[in-house]
Length: 208
Image (cartoon, rainbow, N blue to C red; front, side):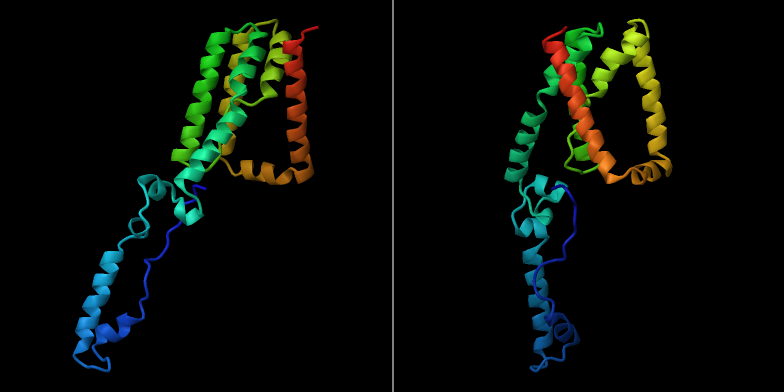
């Protein structure tokens, strides 16, 4: 979707050797053919201009990826609707840990917006980011109770772990760890996170 690719200038270039050398069949017409060729290339311009691409097309390389602004807008709306439940589920789960519902709601929206913007504008990847379901349940129902209900201390632990993961992502060890996990285990982790998030939501909706 957002993969940038450079394409060559359109139009045939077969005339260039004959025209520039001036050794066409008609002798003196070589220079005229060269001028015509250069004029045709000038009129063609850049690929984006020739196709009438918008600034968004040129910035994200949509045309070269076989996409368009309309397709990306539809995909963005569909992605937002798919992820919108996080705005309500995450505050509801973390509220059980003693955190303020409104503050968590704002933080969830800001984290999802900023993360997705950086991923799109800087990394140029069609990936939306938001707080993960599953880890929030682990935080609210495991970490905080084990720390005596002190959610501030639990957030401090999360911050330190974030710094460690960031440092890990800058080292070659990150790629080695990802490649070392079998694909079956990766799929199982995704299914397990979804199952845990579902159980956590049931505890929030219908607490025992």
